[in-house]
Length: 112
Length: 116
Image 1: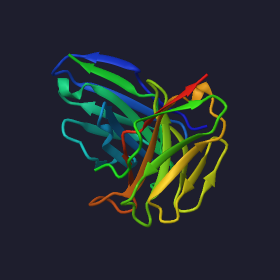
Image 2 (image 1 turned 45 degrees about the vertical axis):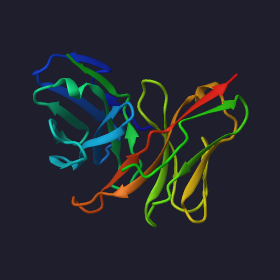
Image 3 (image 1 turned 30 degrees about the vertical axis):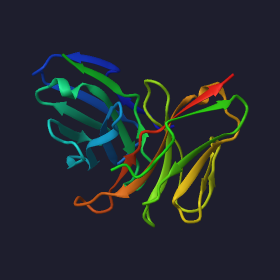
Image 4 (image 1 turned 90 degrees about the vertical axis):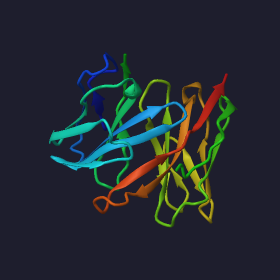
């Protein structure tokens, strides 16, 4: 069974804080993804990575950065959190670029 | 730029088959259809996917029309635990980035309620 875990289920931060969201997968998957999910907008891709130290922008990368130093771990960084980044953040991974994505449980972030 | 259209909600009696429709009239020849579901406050769970042939696994069946403009997910014997939001997704090639990468275009999904 594929296991994708995220560091926190719920997080509350203040405007301007630096926020780290961590994602770990245990299946040696090459690709990892970060999405955010908002009511009425569905899931939107923020960034993805297809190899260690490699990253590509998704549809809404502004205000975010990512880090992939190890194959199993993909971090999403909010350099200076803002209230419009309050959302559900979902991490996913896939074995190859064309393979099925498997999602983690999500982190619900509230920025005050 | 959602490529799929689904009814916002459906009900199904427990033990009956749940048939969830999806329209994807602008799908291209090499774009796969994926189905996921999301139970409240959890991450999306993969169900099934297909290109042009019908597919079946232990969870569900996927029927894709010959023209590929629509598909139906079938849960053969719905249980209360199948209550969730079901997403029909088209997997498209990423444009302008490293070749061979794909992304999912999520729609807004169908909220399926299985009734006792």
